[in-house]
Length: 162
Image (tube, rainbow, N blue to C red; front, side, top):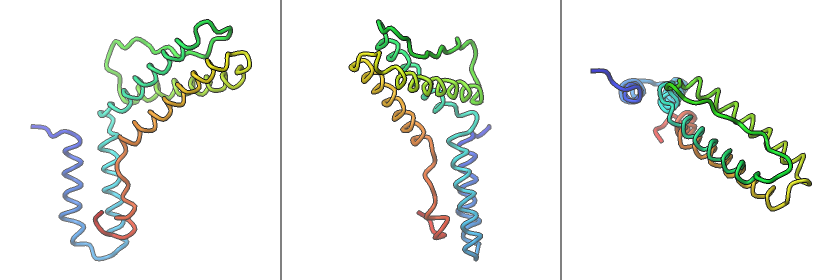
């Protein structure tokens, strides 16, 4: 029976914590092992076969683009738009990341468009579009934070379990 990637990482971390750390005498060495544990925990939540956070970001982007498109109806100038390709197969994390990054570039273009044409757009529409974009950006940060391993700065600098 095969173990899942997160379970393998948990096993490596447990081995380092229970078998290696108690036997190390130097503070420098202990700090290095805590650094390795931190990197392993990062790998666990960001492993290539763990694409959940990328899919979550893309879904949030799609909702944001749809809302901006709805708000832009009737405006004399159209905002930049991003069209997601039809997904006919399961995409790798690498392809999802590239897609997310392309959409983020479009979001940057959208913010530039909004800044450059704000006087032509009704202020209530411009404010609403700006709010939708900013809400998405905050959501993206929350998604990133939720999928980032807790830092181990105290453990690495003080050589103690946190």
